[in-house]
Every structure is written in C-alpha cells, then in structure tokens.
Image 1: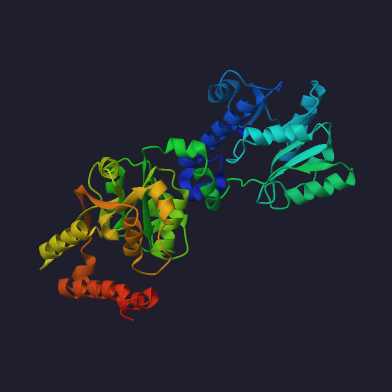
Image 2: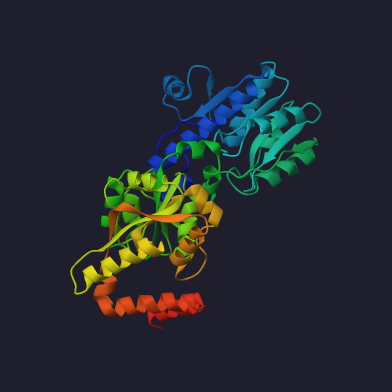
Amino acid sequence: MLKYPRPGAVKTRLIPALGERRACELYRSLVQHTLGEVARFSAAKNIMVEARVAGAPDESAARTWLGPELTITGQGEGDLGQRMERAVRAALADGADQVVVIGGDCPGLTAAHLNAAFAALVTSDVVVGPATDGGYYLIGMRRPLPALFQGMAWGGPEVLAQTFAAARTIPVDVVLLDPLRDLDVPGDLSTWTETAAARAAGVGGVAVIIPTFNEEHPLPSTLAAVQRGAPHEIIVTDGGSTDRTAAIARGHEAIFLSSPPGRARQMNRGAAIATGEYLLFLHADTLLPPDFPRFVRQTLAQPGVVGGAFKFAIAGEFPGRRLIERGTNRRACRSQLPYGDQGLFVSRAVFDRVGGFPDQPIMEDYAFVKRLQRLGRIAMAPATAVTSGRRWQRRGALGTTLLNQLIVLGYRLGVSPVRLARWYRGE
C-alpha cells in the first residue's frame, strides 16, 4: 500500500523537521528499501507482488516511479481500512491462498519478516506485525475478514488494540511477529539511520550538526558557508529558541530538530539521526572553510587519526586577537586539544565507539576530545574555521581568556561542570 511520492503529500508529520522535499526523498528511499526486501523474499517463493498506489496522476507516473516489473493498481476510494480490505478481497478472489498487506515505509521490515508472516498463515487465520506506536506494519490472512478493517482509528495509537478486539469477536487466531518501529515523526528518524540503506547512502558523506539556542543573527552566515561546501546533510538541533532560528534553518534546507537544552544533548540528538559517514560538530557562530568535506575526509584518512578540527581564527578586530589565535592553534596542535569552536569532526563509527558527548552543561567538547585521545591521534586540518568574536568583544580579550583558562583548570581539578557553568555565566 503506497502513496505516490509528491512533496507535501507524504511523511507529512516529518515535514517540520525535514521540509517537504527531503521528507518526500526519505519516503522514496523507504519504499525502495521495502521493495528490495520484498524482491529478496518473493524471488525464492511463488509469491505475486502487487503495488496498490494512491494519489498517482496516472499509471504512467506510477510505472515511472516503481519500474516495469510490478503489478500496479489504484487503491480506490474510502479510508485506509476500506482500501486494504478491498485489496485483500481482490487477491483472494484471484486465487491467492494467503494475502499479506504491508506499507512501504517501515525501515526495519526485512525479507525475514515476510517469510515469517507467510509461514504463520499455514496454520493460523491472521498474522500481524505490531508497530511500537500502537499500529501495525503488516497484516495477513487466509480469508476475507472485513471486521478487521472496520471502525479503526487509522493513524492513531489504538489501531493494534482495536484490531485484536475485532479478532476476538469473530473469533480468529492471531499470530504476532516481532514489533518494529515505524518512521512517522522526527523522534523516529534514528530508526532509518540504523538501516543498511541509509548507511550506504551516507558513505563518504559529511553531516554537519549545529546546536542552537536563539541564534538568529549569526546562523544565516554559518549555514550559507556550510551550504557552499555541499555536505551530505545539515542538521540543526535546537534547544528551545524563541527567535527566528527555526525559520532560518528551514530556509537553508537544514534538517531541524527540537531537543532538550544543552549543547551536548543537542549534538548527540543530531548525531542520532545523521546518516553521513562523518560527523562535523559546528557552533552556530563559526564559519567553515570552502570545500570542508574534502578536508574532513583527508584528515581522518591519515594513519592513526581518530578525530580532527580546523585551525582557529576569530572574526573582527580587537586588541590581542592575533595572540589568542596563535596560542589556541599552538595548544590544539601540541596537546591535541582543539575546542568546539574549531569544528570538531570524527567518523560515525568512532563517535559511536566513544559514546558521544558526555551529558554535562559545559566542557563537553574537552571531555569528548579526551575520550578520542584514548583511541588515537587528533589532527588539525590544513584550513581555518572563523568563529565570532562576540565573546571577546563583550568581556574583553584578557577577561575572556582568563575565564576560559579558569574553567579548564577547574574542570581538571574536579570541579563540578554544573558549578563551572554557573561561573561561566557569572552567577
């Protein structure tokens, strides 16, 4: 059961995070994944596969999308239950002994689930694949059972329970398959990231992850610089902004996610749904160099290197700027301790291996780099990221530098990150 992939008409609950175009592209990818699993299963079985498509302009458009091999039929009128019941009845009338109905957008569905469904129907009346959101990703039967499709709150969390209740009134035996997670809302996006199809699509790609909180002023320039590098994806994870941050992110074709506040949480949230092979964590007020994806790949390809960052520069003019830049770059190279405003980057595999950023309110970048150092070397890319000078201009070069060093010293001496965060904010 498929919908024709038209932007704005599919995966609508993901549009606030992905935008209409990217939500539609994701749906296409999910359908491609599903058809691949169906083909793997049906190739070794005497199984007829029919695609029932809703919303296609005509059969030619549906055929262009799905290819020449599938049998394609329109879904017809009515709610989802009426359309599924019609499909089941037609297949049984055509001589099928068993009928299994699935959607095209469950990322965890595999040929093994289909095999289990048809095997269950050898001895049972009904088989259901439950979804973790209270619906189901698969239903199969051996005879028409219209009661299983009537009076359901389609799209809601009660569909599975209502289906079981209807089955008890007939009554029929129901076999349950393993539960799977659907991909309907932004919180589900990590289920797609974990699939082989998503990983294959992200090979060699760089995902840029930007945590934000009321960053409407620096963000347009930051995102424009990122876009010029043509990364695999841009992910903005927001901690509750009340300004135009969300609109700006969406206007620059970024994936926009809401997150509990806290830079570490926000970066981990972005990483959880990223599909790129490489992850680059960027402050909202830092401009990346041109062609930065090439520098990321080249730096991480060096023997023994597990993480990297860019050279450090500060935008604007103020006394002491050059001295701060030289000192920061010297420390980053000699001690292998770059900070977050240098654009930290790692491979997805390494990020997962170290467990991401520790959930703490400050010094999360320092602690993350220390974790990386246990695995290998941190290298500096031969290009510069330019961060905003607003901190130094607000507090003064000397005051900002001394405060930063005090925070680092306190952290090394074991002062609580919660207390350090209060010191940093002047509380």
